[in-house]
Image 1 (tube, rainbow, N blue to C red):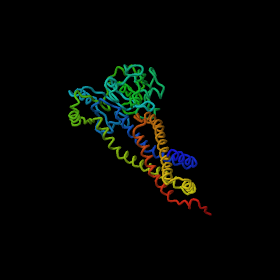
Image 2 (cartoon, one colour; image 1 turned 60 degrees about the horizontal axis):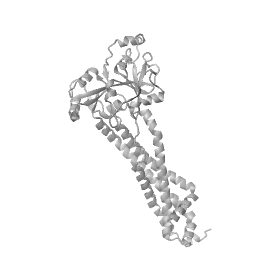
Image 3 (cartoon, rainbow, N blue to C red; image 1 turned 90 degrees about the horizontal axis):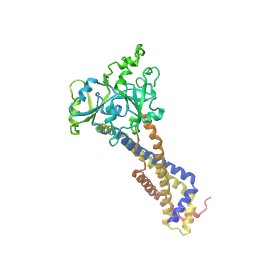
Image 4 (spheres, helix red, strand yellow; image 1 turned 60 degrees about the vertical axis):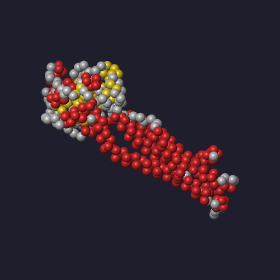
Length: 421
């Protein structure tokens, strides 16, 4: 059998062009299937690890997926905000242990700016309960201090002491810059693999300070006459915030607290459980995921058909070869094994190449997703799915190889040795 395997390999090498194209077709189909599967599981793991230890997220009434996306992942925008008075009512509830206020709206060179307070650095958790750590510097201690994520520091080349000019809203900058009220970076956070890395954190008071003179949404003519010293004497308590991260005294009260916040009198609120919101997000995307996987499976089938086509097409050219093998003592089983082995080698080579292609592709795609959307693809190394895919494709190729094998066996010895004009 080892000799026949060698013969099968040499036979494929004699047809390098068609064999290479067949391997490439199988590789691309396997890469598509594994790419969809790994991107799906990697994105889910990345999303799931972005926030932990937070029992509820509270915001203005909107879809719970939308609230989760803009408050945690900085994707999209809030449709409304929560008044400061309502926030204080939430803080003072007996069943709530701690809160983190979140205020979104501005940006710096495309990176979102988030106003918050010291509780954020003390209570925010990601992954399996990891706390935020500073790679250099310290937390903000002044109205115009800023703490930036690791990706912001790396991409823009910023460090402690760098001056930041924020841009009003989410525009690209220019006329809407807060150039008269720059911030100074006081600290840089250690990498987290979450949207925190792409966020610029400033005090809530700082968020209010830079919008003095912007009450109408645009810069008023008198805004530049108000100095930083004057602003520091103002009451910089924010009028509203975007969302609240909530930790409860006892997790057993999570449903009752959620219901109480959602049905409270006065300003309407929406309290969501992060895990439930993520589950709803996966339900929404599940149909698309299943459709992509189904398409990928069909593409693999097409790739395997290319194996069959390649071997069947070569049979007419190899009729004399088959007959000579039979005449020199090769038994039908040898011919059968030769054809099946060729198909198996094509399938195996294509599957292995497909695994390598998808690993390289995801390594290149991962940083792009992290940089643009703050979503980390996790767990993208080799997995049992890769092994089972390689085995499955190889087994399918071996089965498909039976078709040209049976066809070759039916060729008569005389037909192969007869010269046809």
